[in-house]
Length: 273
Ligand code: MF3
Ligand code: CO
Ligand code: CO
Image (cartoon, rainbow, N blue to C red; front, side):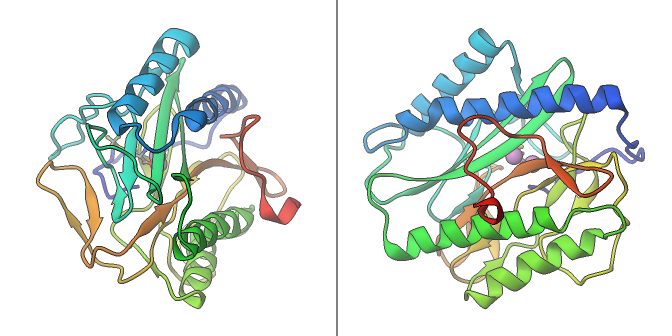
């Protein structure tokens, strides 16, 4: 995400203690996605998936689901524990009675709070058999996220991240959502900087070791324009084209990056294969 309003205080460079906590929160967030994966199948409802994730976070992990009752200025409290965005839903879909059906594409976005620190990550799921076009959108979006992550290094700039994401998406005939972006994260869910998923190399803020932010491109198969639904949260593509998103929480290290939202089931970095 996000264009959600955020505090005006400058986020600090994270300390060694902050980073330790963020590794734990990140792993736990990712483990919720590992846990829910076998339940994502035709006939399940998004509400059931939400309840399973909620109970796993609260009862097993002893984490707090950050979305539940989250209410940035101008927003009504978010009513569920994860976001589930299906097909033409871009982000912030609210879990409910909708049945998953063969061929749907689904983003599940999990944010846990552990000992006051946030871990924010999302993955795409294809329900049953997906179309070639749906698979291609999910794959290219995954590559976009990883290209963005590989642009994270001290001496680089935020604009480098947006640039590589936009170039890869557009080269493949897709478009980048502009209204929502990655964000600084730590003891707050959303803080500066904004991490745009489009832009020019060498522009915007300098990357410095100890910064932690998310990379979470939202890529549309059609046009980039979006619309907000009447529930006050769900974002959809204006042209009803499919939309995909992947998200990791990333630390700037002395020589590059460290992905914090990793667990056994994390799909591997394509560059490491
Ligand atoms: N997890 C989303 C993000 O990546 C934010 C969701 S806000 C909510 O930033 F309230 F909808 F949960
Ligand atoms: Co996020
Ligand atoms: Co998220």
